[in-house]
Image (cartoon, rainbow, N blue to C red; front, side):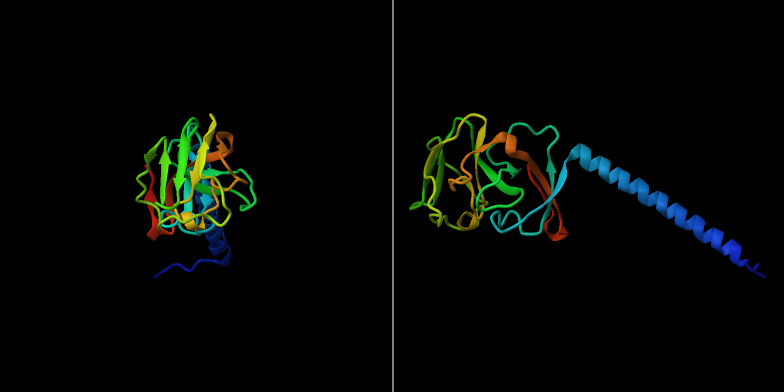
Length: 188
């Protein structure tokens, strides 16, 4: 028949099992911290300015290590404070240093160096923003011009309080949305 365990023996086994789980937890926590320290950071999306590409509450992996030169089309996280935002903001790079941006609200188009952008990612036809803003700007070297994909609900480089953004304010490039799982996607 089965041997009956003494109370002290059961306590030692339970303590041993708890210790093993604690070790697993510590190893997983150290691995996660190491991965995110080396690869990037987790950043939540706050607001609707990047819909339908990103949704409020999405969690993104943002690469900062090895990301030095923003390119047009990149989705970036910025730290530059301005009137309409508190904390990091997420926007799409439309133009980089030396390029000219022209915005034609009547046609709903953005031109960079005279060429209309193909923007299948924007949510709806663009209307003039409530804050007025730039319609033509030459982006200074070392800066970027950013806009939200939901142009009618985005405070971005068209807003004079943000304007063009020095690349030193860029925290990193959004590489993927990993939560919620139904929004899982990567960015090229």
